[in-house]
Image (tube, rainbow, N blue to C red; front, side, top):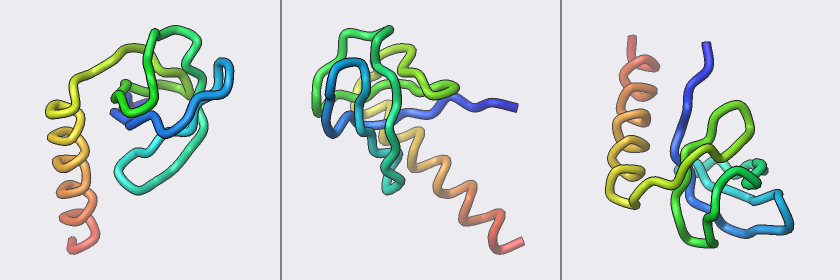
Length: 74
């Protein structure tokens, strides 16, 4: 199963960007979107597939973190 997750773009070098998934920093390909440093994108299978507004991205990341926290308690 693959999940599409929001991430904030920290830096861009050509088609590769360093992104922050709410604390986890990774590299991803941004060739499919017109995004800038500081914007949020949805990442799927190592590619940014669309831009998303900051409020929606932060809400999704918060829900994901709550899910992970609850699964650790179980």
